[in-house]
Length: 66
Image (cartoon, one colour):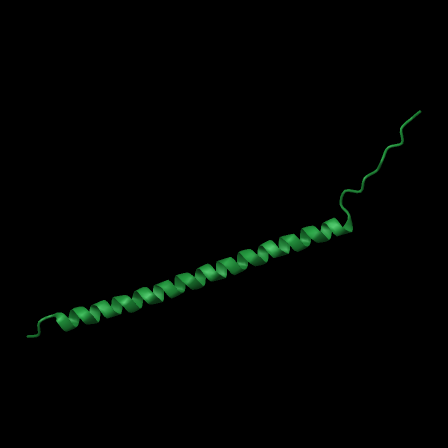
């Protein structure tokens, strides 16, 4: 008896859809994470500049006047 080969379709439409959806989710999450990182860095820079300004004002106020 000769065996009949079984043909398996590897890339079905559902599998391709799952790949596209998961790839899209990954890209979206990376973009959101990058945006949050940039926003956090910007807020940290603003806070640092504000604190530096306060230090300069405090130093100027404590410096002796002539």
